[in-house]
Length: 422
Image 1 (cartoon, rainbow, N blue to C red):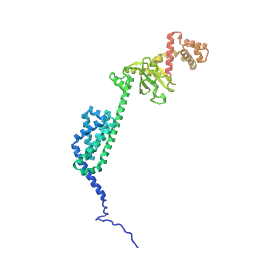
Image 2: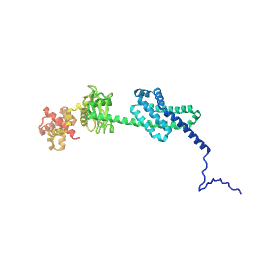
Image 3: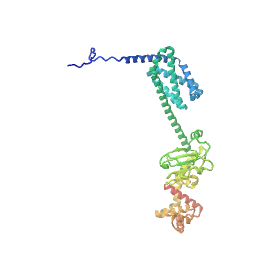
């Protein structure tokens, strides 16, 4: 009977088995890696000693191969040289001491990415510069090793991936810093534009800020303007919507708390045409009169708000210049209420339905340009009925609808009543 052969276990004094020896190939690989690092470090120390010359070469390459850096060097040769020198020093130091130099190298690359974003250097040009720097450092390592120990050049192959992984890592780092800074700059620009536009609309803009506001809003400082106020909560059915303007009208839109405002540049005589009468269903739009210069936009905004307050709840476009009497009433609600009470108050002792009939007849007669015949057609009653109701109003209030001053007051009182009931 044959017995199975058990493998021998190497024993050593003590409780456990002796670990099996590592394969020879692993020891060879370890020795090769150690030799490769020795060669890398020897060449890197030489590059570090010759850093100014290496910096000169990279700056020259950048000027030759990257147009964006050519312009940057012409504008700030010393600054570019120092930046390249600092970046190369950190990069080469990281080859000698990866752990100790890592954080400093990352901070350096991040700062370069952020600074170049602030200065407007294209990101592609920046990444190209970092790759050119990596190529120059690698070529320097190969050239130095070929000069002093040609037989060791083959060992550099074993550390090539480390060098290029470093370059890739820092390209990614630079791109992240660049894009983050770019987003921050865009937010600052947008916020500055919002602040400048808000100050113009509030009428609090300083004279010294007008040139900046004109540039930021892309509008001339001394142009002719109207302000359009749109009910942002209803226009188009969503907050922040904007009124439709006539084709070709230059305008800057600002989202306010209760309305959106368009600062629109207009030509003389074309103020009424800046906003089409037809808007989205239910949209309420108020248009100011024209003012001269951005400094007067605050007054135009107040006019636009008044025009918007005159818009029916069902929607519509109101141009202030076409509703000046109503605008006067809306501009002073307290006086409007006093006028309505004085002209319409005597009807308060009537039955509500009876008073409503008289007021409706009066308003329809005024809207029909004082024609009882046209008013009767609108009210579906006889002409004499209209005249009888008008006389009754005169008897109750002591006012005469044939007297111009009384007629003006009655018209304003009816307007105030309509506005106050909203």
